[in-house]
Structure formats: structure tokens, C-alpha cells
Length: 184
Image (cartoon, rainbow, N blue to C red; front, side, top):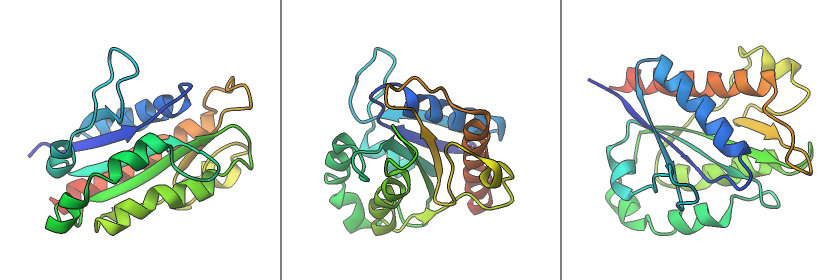
């Protein structure tokens, strides 16, 4: 049985999109299908998330830029439309993880990851973090936390993903695909 894992993101300047692609790549390396989805169509290649995507997925990676320690409003607006899925319990026991990018080292990434987690937990999803067997988590000088993958984009958004950030993104996608496979 083929696994379909949704990588759902909003990206304003490209950093979160780059993280989403790294996570999707590692999901695909595990033999699963990564379905990249966005909240709004900003570019020609964007595919906007549907509730059916969530209902039929085997796992979810969810990320946005940090907005003062919270998720982007585009994501919040979408989750506010999912009470019908919540009432039916359609996302219960699906594994999920979160990722975020901020402009500065202390720009609210950890708070945003916690904020991103809230709708997932309310939906009964199983939240996965980054375990400390990921060596980059202990050595990173940029992004990465036990709550999820993060990136520090810089105040002018010029910082590309560091090697540590990419490896943490890969570990998140790999773990999500492996857990989703075990739950099948």
C-alpha cells in the first residue's frame, strides 16, 4: 500500500517552501508519496490544500513562517474551516509534524511550532518532534528544535537553509514516513 503524506505550508519569501521541499524529498526517499500543498495559490506550481487531502492522507507535515510567535494567518483561516473534520474525527491517529522559519534567532520559532501543533492536537493527530538522536539538533547554530524543524532566514530573508537545518528537515520527513508506515 502506497503512503500519501501531505506537506502543507505557507511561504512568504521562499524559506518555508525550501523546508517543505527538503521534507518532501526525505518522505519520497522512504518510498512514500509526498503531496506538496499550500493554503493559497501564490505561484503557478502551487496546489491548494483541500479537506479531502487531509482526510485521505497517511501523515501531515505542516509549516508556516512565524508571525510574532504564531502561525501565518492563511493557515489559521484554513484550520478554522475544519470543524466538520474534527466533529467526525477524520484526522484522529494520523502522525504529524511541524516546521517554521523566522527572520531572527529569537524570532519566535519555538512558540510558532507550539502554535502550529494546536489544531493538530485538537484533531487527535499524533505529534512527532525531533528526537535527540538527530546529531544536528545538538550542534546547530541556526534552526532546529525538539518541537520541529526551524530555519533562521535573516532579517532580509537572504539566509539559505544551513546544512544542519536541511538535515533536520530530512530527519523530520524520514521519521514521519517511517511512523506512518508502521501505523498502516
